Length: 133
Length: 277
Image 1 (cartoon, each protein chain N blue to C red):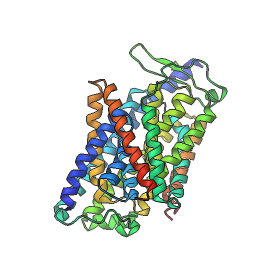
Image 2 (tube, helix red, strand yellow; image 1 turned 180 degrees about the vertical axis):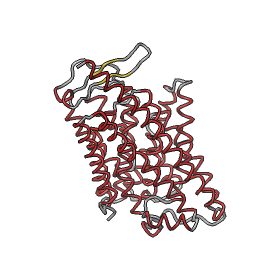
Image 3 (tube, chains in turn yellow, brown; image 1 turned 90 degrees about the horizontal axis):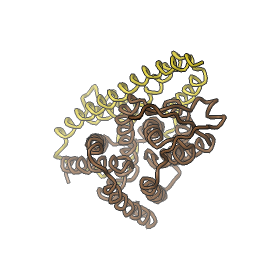
Image 4 (cartoon, each protein chain N blue to C red; image 1 turned 45 degrees about the horizontal axis):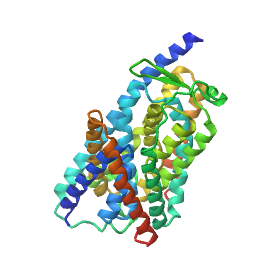
């Protein structure tokens, strides 16, 4: 029993290191993309008047779906690039769940494989469930 | 005002928000919403979108350090994330049917509660006998200190799980990390030592915020022109804050900021009550 615990801790430690790095690089990459898009945005439209942010226009802003964001990037649209950074940022913790799942599979921890799968499916419902109303 | 001026002022404001959020432990997202709505008169829905992004950035950035030190209880975080993500998705759905003024009042109330939570007495004691459920779910663990690892066990798993679901709903509805509610669930209810509960709460905030962020992104709450200065500013402020925290004891600062935050909270409630949003 005791041996089993120490073995688990070792695997835990490896996964912890990996998750730590993944979170850090996710945030760094997302910030860099947002920074690049932001600089292009300021260069292109920095001198323009401020949009009416006190009025909420919802999806009319554009770049609210992956398709629109990809089209935006291919035309080097500044807002599209910033939104890509936003997507990378949101994907960072989601990816973390996926890596935790790999860790629990390696440890053969059935209970936590199940728990992680539940969390992951909630995320999938949120992403693909058409909850935008 | 041109876009350039707005971006620069917001960048500076978001930097301060990140700094204050990190020094008080409230999180940058909480300070960003009043900044955007009360100072810049931005629609609260854009503010919620930007605050969610700030919460994800902050949480992931800080969590990477704590996870590597082995303080974060990953199993506990994962188990409680079932409650927070389901809650967050529910909160994002409820948000559509909630008037913005109600959201502002609710936000003010949570802000007051969070300020009170940050200056209360903290649970430092590690529990030595946990409940049955804590063993079944393998939630008991240990964390490293200078004097060697400290073992801890926990109890009231069901109650903690329920408060976490509520924290998730608030996070999805208001666009904040709900760190205060998460710490209440772990620290006061499940009797987890303070260091573990704060880092594990921080670890969970990213996933909780991401669960509702996806919905809000599709609804157009995340405007690139606001997201850009807010994300970079809050991250920079939080980074400076974490460096400052190792060198100074923020006790006095904490009291000053929490008092200031209370005034902001009252203004949010007052404006919401008068239908200013």
